[in-house]
Length: 132
Image (cartoon, rainbow, N blue to C red):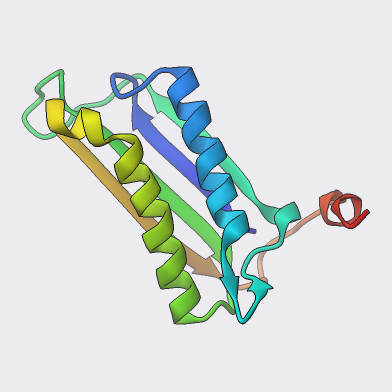
């Protein structure tokens, strides 16, 4: 972990813009540190974007757009680390869409969900491969 899922309205951005945003957000997750230690293991970072073709926003104005980011993390990070991560990710999202925000209605949001290891199953060789 962490897994960051972006859901966004089809009228918000093209694939190139969203791919660039995904890259920036992944780099941001990788850069998070607390006490000179990584907050998140590199092998656990996932960022994915789901384009919503069907949507209805507020009053139905077809120019209105949205992006909602949901970060899922395993339990155990400090409140400070979670706050710093959320602030850093949301700053990137806001900067990325600053022009769109100025031009039309736009709703941006981010939430962080923490879960326990109980009830999760994983099969992952990325951590071992990245140690080399």
